[in-house]
Image 1: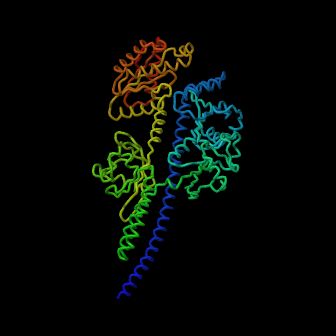
Image 2: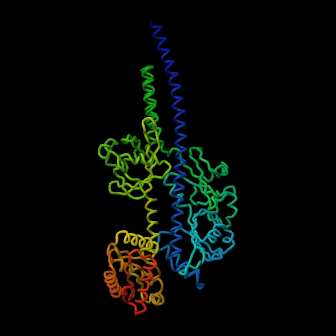
Image 3: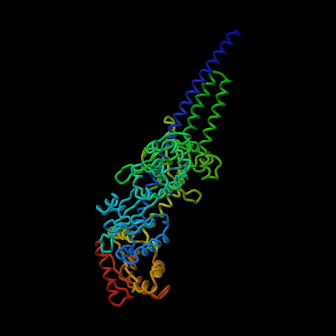
Length: 602
């Protein structure tokens, strides 16, 4: 009997050892496969972030170019010849002083693609321009072009905008050039180091290299490229990385993102490196938990001692992966479609008043309670987790959410991955993009406001007048517009200088805005010309408002005494914009023609 028990115990022990060996081997293979999937997803996440940053940079560069091309002084300067470079330098300097754009290059060309002005160099070589296909494209099609391109100085993000005078005569091109250094810094905040490498063919076109850094005949465009990574690429043959690849090597996730010109040709590669130790391995935590249950059941059948050993092993593994999850800088949740199951430490940095996910769940139930319903951002939906269903159904789209947490606004990019199909468990990542969103909104605001006076510009006026006309036709309401300009403003510039003239525009536009109602809005549409949209009032009330403004301007006498002439007209139901503007413009003309400093109704 003892021999039987002994043999049985030996058989159980051998069986347990074989089971453990098979089990551990299986878990290791599954874990390795899951890690590879995590690394692939991280590489896609890196590429998606980079693509988003490049797209935002293109839009902001285009906004700068459009704003600069919309400045009424620029066409006047180009059509002059005296001290052109000095005046352009002053204009660009004023533009940078009144905006947040400091680290940009500005290039102005005439209608024959001869370079008139380069803000970053004194090199005069018109062949650099006439050979550029992108400039030829804009010249031919007379349209805005935003692109990545290689020129004689570097690879840059460029926006090229046709330039016209007030008579809509084509004068040339305005080219605004921005760089990749700010994108590299943005990636660095996500723990991603990067090197921007131009391919050999296009590197030969760079005659005056800005960074002066080359690896095996390939130009490196970003100043902040880490020296260790430059040495790494040199030692491992940089050609292997100058193609669309994503690999794990030497403790890094390395992915190369092609930079394409407007012809969709790959002219360079953005090579990104991320330490694998900084990667959030969300799914591994649940993976270990699931196989822990299977291990416990198997070990209970085999033997108690084996059970203890395997539990120790699994707990150790679980603690390891939980530790990895907690190192993520993003909020990581494990959710089903009913509640939050788990959260990493970053979650509690945003919600420090809760000590556990259970405490949060008891008070709020769902994180969607903090969502702000706003256009272009993810909404709460009708039920608690309808937002999660929406993301799952629209996996290919980008999803952003605006959240109010403890009276502070945050913006997040949301990524959802299925962990368990059987239990419908999902990992939900909230990546904080607050800085990028705030910067984007500042750029959008700048594109609609005059950079000198900060009132609405012609673009914003066009948008608002269309809205008011549509509203008036739909709801049978009315509104009036008031056009005014400063009398003898040329004398102010000639006598006091353009700087004082600019101060007059700034000071008196503030005065006018101060005397308007909350629903009224003033726009600068020309040098010293302004238009006011006044909703819900007819021409009599608009006349009184204009007269009040005229007296306020006459009595103000700050910087220098000035007066202004006003034209007033009321919208006639469903007339077109040209008719409305012609009437108010004619009224202003009559006010000026009959002696100035007066209000005329048209």
